[in-house]
Length: 238
Figure 1: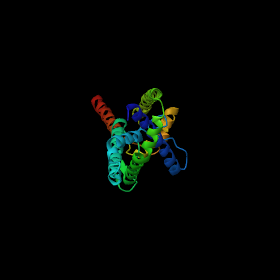
Figure 2: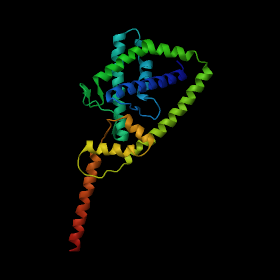
Figure 3: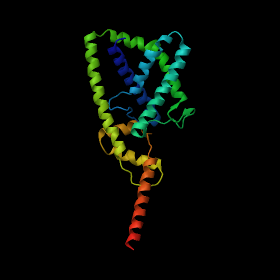
Figure 4: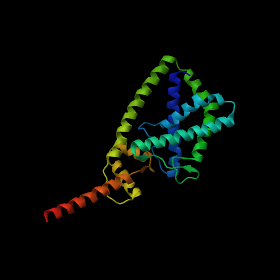
C-alpha cells in the first residue's frame, strides 16, 4: 500500500470507530451523544489501531487464532498507552473501565480488548480488502488530492481541539475539601458554559474524571499558609 492509501484507511477506520462509539454510547446512555476527542466525526485511536494491525499483523492473515490474540494485545496496549498519555498531558481521565470486570487501572478491560481482537480479524480478512479495492478504483492524482485535503482538515481539527482541551487546565477551583466527584461535576458545568466546541468535548466524554486532588490539596495548603501569615503578622504587631 502507498502512503495515500494508508492515510485514507486511517481516516476511514477513525470515522467508523466514531460511528461505533456513537451507537454504543447512545444506546447505553439512552440519548444521542457526540463522541470523539476531535471536533470532527472521527476517533483517531481506531485509525491508529487499524494501521498498526494492518502493518504489523497482516502476515498472520492465515493464522486466525494468532491474529486474534495479537490484535487483542495490540489494541489493549494502544488503548492503555493513549489513556495514560492523555491523562498526563491534560490531567483528565477520558474513559474509565473501573466498574467493568477484569479491568487494568480503569484504562482497559477484557471486553473492549477482546473487541479489538475481533475487529482485527474482521479488518484483515474482510474490511481491508474491501476498502483497498474501492480506493484502487480512484485515480492516483485524485486520491492524492483527497488525502492532502483531509490531512489539512485533520491538522486544523487537532490544533483547535487541543486549544479547547487546554481550557480544562486553566479552570480555577474554589474549595479545599477532597471531593473529586463533586468538583468534577462543577468543572463540567463550567466547561459547558464556555463555547459550542467545549460543550461538544464534554458531551463526548460524559464520564470523564478530572484528577484534581493534588490541586485541591495545593489550594488547602495555600489557605493554611495564608492563615499562618495573618497570625504571624498579628503577633508581630503586638
